Image (cartoon, rainbow, N blue to C red):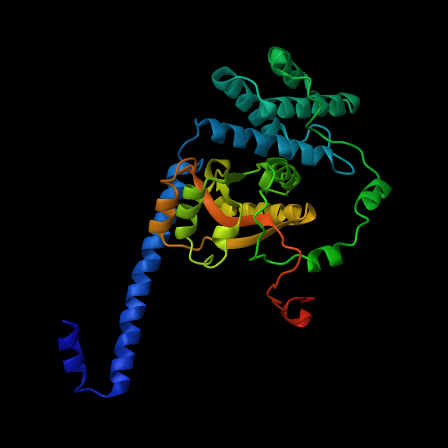
Length: 338
């Protein structure tokens, strides 16, 4: 068939062959793009909270979204007494449903502790919150002793003192590492890094980011075979991290891309946390076609209801090594005052 095509094309000018090849590639890529978007659409439709309102993760996300609205209101300089009744109602309904079906957890504790502060604020400002107090009393056994949720008072000096580090040198000293030692990475270092990354901002504090640590050589090789940017060094990394974003944390059509935003923020925090602990890492992008994503989710431990943000090769840094300089764009191409 190819011989026949070449024979037919030989009767036409070279420019015609080039135009035809461009057209074929354009049609092929258009169909591929449509198929990839359909895959993303099906993934979000199946695993997000839009059509699964009774799923555990979705109920939890709704509670977090609502109680964070209350937290934000309480943190204003001059909150309006009685604000946020619809958010408070959503929290109470969600907690009742969650506790009945799944029991208590950190989310219900934080949500109800936030409402306790809401009651204290409104009572001090002569706003009627008897209806909230009655619901809280019925949920009394569900309120844990954990002192979290609501607001806390801090000072500018406290923030400044804790943030007084030279981030310029810290950022500039971080490179993508493609040479690693044979030293094993301690689980405790990874735990510390993830603990730090948990502070990453996320939409309404829903914390969709997750990390799956792969150390088994066979599974690591399988993971790396699905990603085409690690040749020549990926097998040297002691660990490969799969960074994902839980789709059940997102509840609306408007949040259809939020997993990539929140997941990307979480990944960057984790990368800098690893850097602060002396570990080297290299981002392995996961801009893949549906078949590769499906193959990844066939591996043990990778949930189908998560969006895969990236892989991260992690290991100890040699005493001396070469790194890509990777100079950055001029500042005037990045920074715009409008």
